[in-house]
Amino acid sequence: MNYRVIIPAAGQGKRMGLGYNKLFLPLGGRALIAHTLDVFLQDSSCETVILSTNEEERELFLSLSLKGDRSKITFVNGGVERQHSVANGLSSIDAKEDTLVLVHDGARPFITREVIAKVVQKANDNGAAIVGVPVKDTIKRIQSSVVQETIDRSSLWQIQTPQAFRLSILHEAHQWARVNNYLGTDEASLVEKISYPVSIVEGSYDNIKLTTKEDIYFGEAILQAKSQEEKQ
Ligand SMILES: Nc1ccn([C@@H]2O[C@H](COP(=O)(O)OP(=O)(O)OP(=O)(O)O)[C@@H](O)[C@H]2O)c(=O)n1
Ligand SMILES: C[C@](O)(CO)[C@H](O)COP(=O)(O)O
Image 1 (cartoon, rainbow, N blue to C red):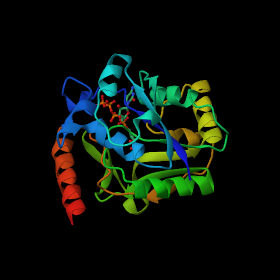
Image 2 (image 1 turned 135 degrees about the vertical axis):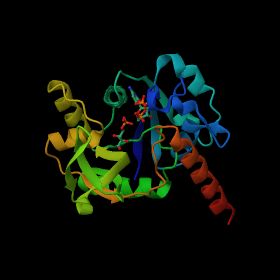
Image 3 (image 1 turned 180 degrees about the vertical axis):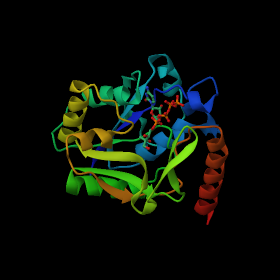
Image 4 (image 1 turned 90 degrees about the horizontal axis):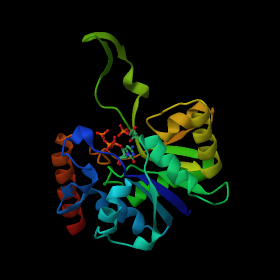
């Protein structure tokens, strides 16, 4: 099943506190974003990578050393919010309405072709599918530093990306968000608003989004573990 992927990569990495876009953080000696891009550039089912970037960083992205077919990459400008960066990527797609479109955070370098294939298959079957993992911690609602409620975690999942959709569904969802001035933290929250059922496939706890400084050593450890696995 072929697909296209929009990779939002136009953030500032404020929570990482590096003073520059965290996607250029060296991870195993290569920029974080290079690891993410490699997976899709090497996936024969991936037709196009739509990279949404800050215009002033375009040259940096072009200078990345990558593995795979970099001719798949097309660039769009990012926006103020992640959703806008994705929307700009979506606007650049001229394809049939049943084309499969994935959205994957540039900051999640440990996605695998196996999980991509799972979420693509599910979206092909159902129209909308996302990746996640069951939560492992107890989750509580807090107000003014006081516990208000412990939430039953048996049905709670930690949601990741890729998130995969039929093009027509993603278009309708983003259109609804524009008309209603709605800002979601992921694409699925927009699709939920147009009452389209979103399926989930189980991904991996390795598929972290590098967000704060602690994630750097988690990322280095995951990279180390993966290179050990490849040697076996
Ligand atoms: N206006 C934005 C904001 C975020 N992103 C991208 O969306 C992904 C997930 O966002 P996040 O992890 O929040 O990255 P940042 O926005 O850079 O981080 P922060 O919120 O700490 O600034 C990242 O690949 C980021 O580059 C984007 O394309 N455009
Ligand atoms: C899309 C996402 O990765 C799903 O967990 C997450 O919502 C992105 O949040 P961010 O604050 O934009 O990184």
